[in-house]
Image (tube, one colour):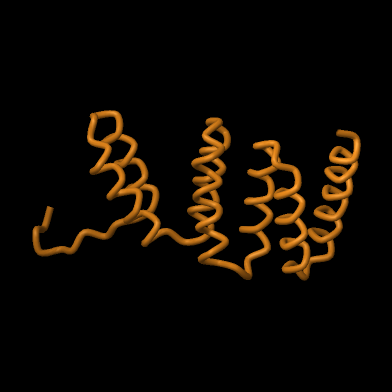
Length: 130
């Protein structure tokens, strides 16, 4: 490896290395790499990684990432839609509905708007039944 060549960090590499450091007993090093990953990651990378966390049932960790994503990309309907889905999985229906409604307001795509509104109607009926 050429020592003069700068190291280019990418989101997935940093996240993978952070998990390895956690497994090796270096939580401080892992935290530093996770923070660095958020500095270099773009919306889609953070969003996709959050879904991986959801699939691993690390819901609160995914919500933290998705909240950071909507803070960094407040005009992204997809970031809000994903955050809403995470809150739905957690069982926080009022927050899920709130974030789905934000996603619906932000998207111009009528198909996405209709899907989200149908979903919100279904969630609202669940909330009324409780």
